[in-house]
Image (tube, rainbow, N blue to C red; front, side, top):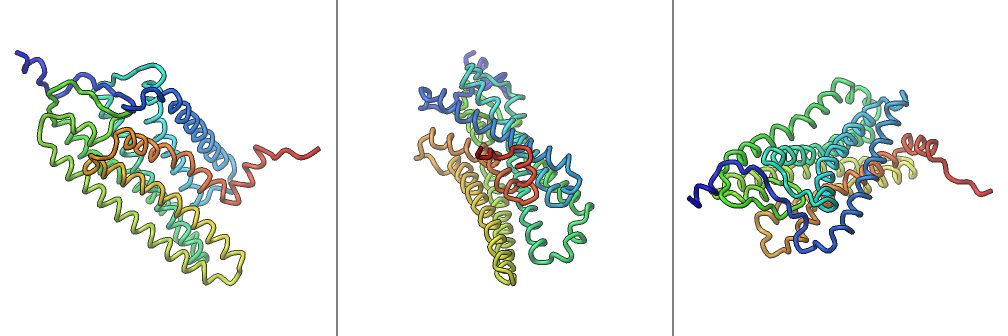
Length: 313
């Protein structure tokens, strides 16, 4: 009878613990996460507003920047609201369907962060073949790139949802995390989850391939930048590429760390893993508007018009 009471395919709810081991610091962590979320909202909404209201910015680079801003807003919102509910109101229960939904949006929006690959392509064309920029990045091609950015992660995440949906869960489903993730949820199942682990590694492989493509793109950009006749143009190109590459290095390092520690990082404290996993989701959406947006001269000038500097009296 006890087995019958606990054996079911889909649990009614999961219990999210937040960050086990750091319960005493939950309120301070929540203030940090809330601040990051507010900055993310302000930064990305400002980018979207500026591009929408200024016809001169209706160009390929800024269309891609808008796609990235929408992705940043979606990723942050899918994560932070649930986390703050845990930290502030002790809302720890989440339904099985709600957990799958959050998992889908988090993994999908994380995959869509690869919009930075399109940004790298845009910079490559602008520097390496500026005379054909408008031809290569015509509106139809930008629309196709945007469609790939949106559809590719969804296609890759659906099998993950199917694998979790097929798992039986045979005990109290307590998830030692602040939100639902694929392998963290799968490990609660009372069944063989090798298929889940192998698919997770497959996604890591694709992630590494994308990273190599981005790296090679920026190598070509840097090669072209060093051939520019003007010193100021070289410095501008190097500055832009350097900040972009630093951002991608941080993002991909945290993503790979999060993925691999689920499988191989048993010796890493759980609280450290959860904090790193949270930061790899929260930090890029906050920094992207600055790295890719405000550093662009056109956006920077319009931001200064909205928030003019205080002048000394």
